[in-house]
Image (cartoon, rainbow, N blue to C red; front, top):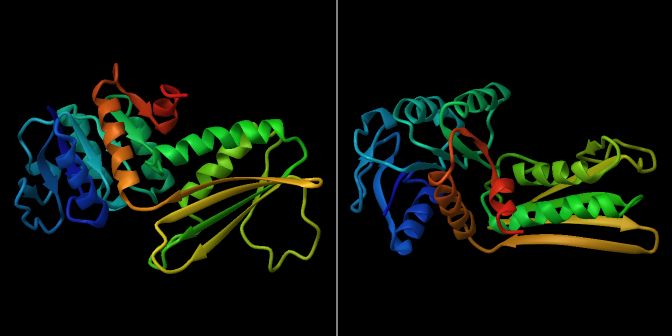
Length: 253
């Protein structure tokens, strides 16, 4: 049995992760972490990682950047691998993750969907092959999402940049730009409305032809399933290091 801890267990994503783990059959949730310590009938819920003294193979985090210091301290001290699915880390926090990864395996991704990460690999290949094509990214999310553009849109932009022969400029809005589109731009547009879980589209526009690569998330389960995949991957990691969905996808394609 894979022994899993869930940080942010009472949040929207934490509850979905717990359900995915229950359905897996070979996963045991040994505890969850929630700032308020609200009870859960299936497993003990603690207010902080420091209060946990049991056994665990891996920790999955869908909480907030504020929880990161305690998680890193716990992971390093207890040698428990960490799957960090939370977004919005500062540059200092990202550096702290890299430092901790020198001592314990850490899997970090701005999007845990296997499909979106396969899309990223395809975007890099397309950008390298489609010389001279303009690249535009459109992301759509629910009306409660506070950040724009999404972390995933930025990941897709980076994936495109890796395939381009130049360093692109990201353009987030064109209202104030009164000039023709520069060939070195990657345009990134954000749409917020309804309960859209997450849509991402990458458009390659060339002379007399366009190619569109798109991913649509129908529910949060795709992210939870990806996080569990990452947990399995990390539990079998050969040693400390900073891993990502690129490492996991590399085993598949």
